[in-house]
Image (cartoon, rainbow, N blue to C red; front, side, top):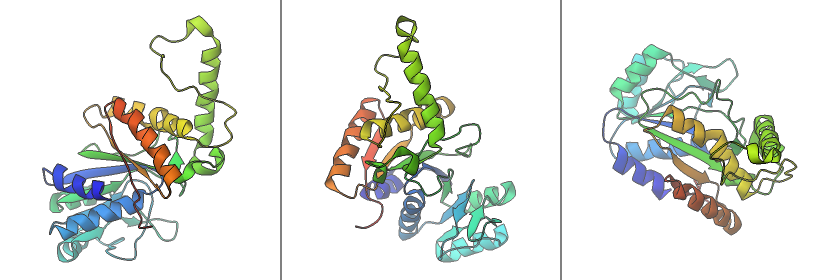
Length: 260
């Protein structure tokens, strides 16, 4: 996780510095590691969510006032603040007043801005997700390499949306010379894909997230973390994806958030 530590050390140039973490396959762990590094440096970190997030065992001020949340952050260095969700054990957004208050007091605010039902990869429905605050300074896009070699429907949240796009791309391809200008070099989708391979995972990243992020946040290219590089084969496939993304000018790292 040296890449995340380096991120905190080199890019936090203002207060508050807002980092929104999206995607799947290790967002919460990524946030925990960054928050601990911020605390180790003697700064204050606040964690919120714009969706739903499990309440941690440590540093929780969920359900308390924003004044109490700020006080706890100043005393302990880290605070998770928000309202208690109806579903037991989860937290939700603290409300705009609470969010602004915690932003005013923290050095770094970490926002879990996406949900994936604990699956390692995702194809988002951009009509409602991810929910990235407009004051975001850095976007981290996490994807889990543990999805590789497994059936897409078992490892990809909202796989039906991706499958619909794959079917459309295949239909467009069959139209021949009338294909849209500028589509050279597109991934070659296989509608009957039975396992998640590196090409399909790259397709999820590019067509699920990166194209939309480029339109919505043109000045904030995301840092892509390919997490769960737990063995040599996954790391090798992750490095192939990293190379493809870096050819497009993106920063990408192959990492293992949790200790082996």
